[in-house]
Image: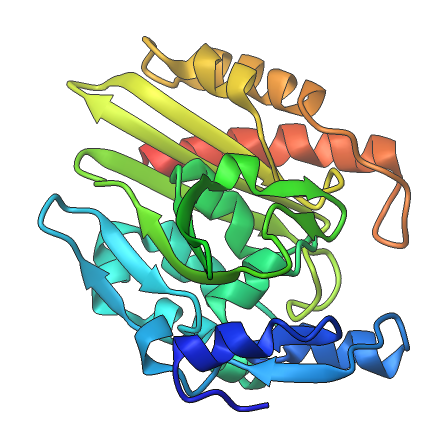
Length: 275
């Protein structure tokens, strides 16, 4: 189905076998491997009201759910205000994937290895969901429920993502991918620091690829607050980051190896944030 407006999209969702798609890059793989069997695909791509990147009067950034990852990676506004977010979007897959894959799909899919979720967690992003019952706001920190599970209800459409004002914040994102650059990261780390006169006043650290979903590392971030983020403090924060996740063995490495890489890459990402 190809709805022409949100009302039509919500009506299509009333079918019990309907499934929303944006770019369908992940959906196509799931269908190919017979992991899902929807009776109807509802394509949101043509809905102009769900796309676009803008700045609100308070300095918040608003990104429509069907905005493509290529658009995010190339946006001058996002490159200036949230360089780690733009960079993470530019790391996903390859140019063909980024040309059609959407922000909403990257979040709703719930794959813990995705590049975008850790950065948006570190940015304290909030989501808006629409249904016949109205709209509701969801903190991204409450959105991921488990492996490929999220808090979006069956009758809801993810409409937009909002990033709070980023004045005086610095951010950095690193992914560790020992194989092909097109592959999912073995470990991903996003760091956001609020700096005032060389002192960290607030901080967020988030990880990807090392748990059932992208996760925050609040204890690790707290260790940085009130410090200059120097090597000793960063080392302690990295140790606490390891304790905040639960990696598992897979073809990209053992749980112990991933934990070691979380420590290494958390220290490096903190250092990049302060450089």
